[in-house]
Image 1 (cartoon, one colour):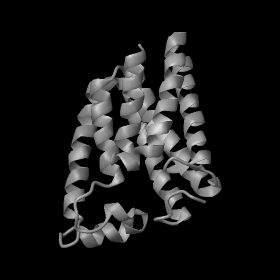
Image 2 (cartoon, one colour; image 1 turned 120 degrees about the horizontal axis):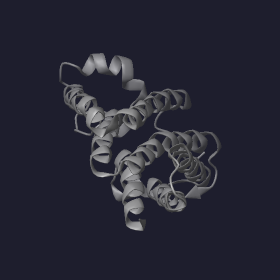
Image 3 (spheres, one colour; image 1 turned 135 degrees about the vertical axis):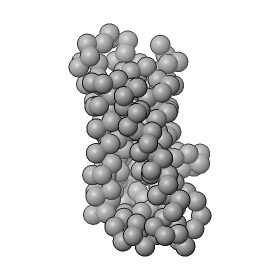
Length: 205
């Protein structure tokens, strides 16, 4: 295995299980639109940022936060240096993506972040053998294939035209490559993945 081994596989599964709960956001957006969705997400983002700040060592939330979530945290999310945890990045990503991209692009981009990042992490940890950029080939292939499935589902569910499907497949491949090098670029993949997908879609359209 050549994927990141900072946390054990069981904690990785638990972390990604929580990650999958974020699918509730694009589902809610699908039915109620961006305005009402952001009405809930923006306050949640501020709460998450507050917890991020005051869960650092020496602050009053530190012991309570680490008691419940410490074993799932990656090394760069711990310590006194201020680095956002995954939950804060996901919420910030949702705010940005739902604000700037058209509905179907936003839903696809954020769903790919949640679903494909989960598939890539689990497949990469369990089966990754061949190095590909900064990740494993197996994990990156799982990302791209699952992202293509998300694009196809959005295309089918909303009855979109063929161009959305074709452009979406290219954008899914681009997002897969960026996911594989995001750490080297100094980018958090929770931002890099949906932004890459969204901007490639807008460029192609």
